[in-house]
Length: 331
Image (cartoon, rainbow, N blue to C red; front, side, top):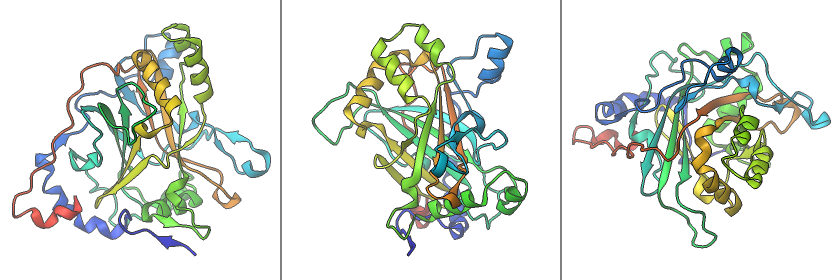
């Protein structure tokens, strides 16, 4: 009963095409040049009572997010996985401004090398997540919405030398998570007609929420909505598009298309995001006992970033010359 998708399927065999696509690297923008990673983790700053850094990113540990536990379908209990780090490691975060939404950012930036990840790795070695944030006031009418956008581009990679079976043996990866990930990569639809990619969800967390609310840079309604969003999972679909290359899957999250209330609150909070520490985890939802407990695929922390700051424009698409043109479908 399982069906495999076509246009956005990723298969391990695609890796053989990476040499052709890498020929364009010299024409692509360097990722991670504009926004630094924090030097001292936020939690360590709080412990030592030192001021956390601003305008930077970090990778929160997987144990900060409540996930469905082994018996969740019976007891509805969520747990924090103390020992499990995210499967993918965050390599860079970039903010780009554009007059309209831009998809498939992986075509425009130089991606990390995957040479140290075995060729037969059953899951995509790179994961790119592009959060497309509207920077104009929310409107009720006039879909599809588009306009000035901040593209928040996070690039993840499996760790060098990643071997799935070894990770399972060492307790760093659940076998059922690996199976879900393989189906996610292949864009498999299960027997009930549900695509595995429909399980992808985001779990937001704001470690400095109460401190942030205390700054009084926004009203009670915004404070209430932030408390409601804290640790509340949200399925990524249907406001999402997938793009696939030889070494990556890109997930474009279209916030322009979110419901009006969410967009309105985002716009009213935009000016005070520079006081907030915002974490997000990506998880494939477990919906049967065999798919639990859940595990964090990837995480990101945006630490006191001023969304009103000047950010570089979206890099142009690299130009193909005639010799490279044969590889153009695999970029």
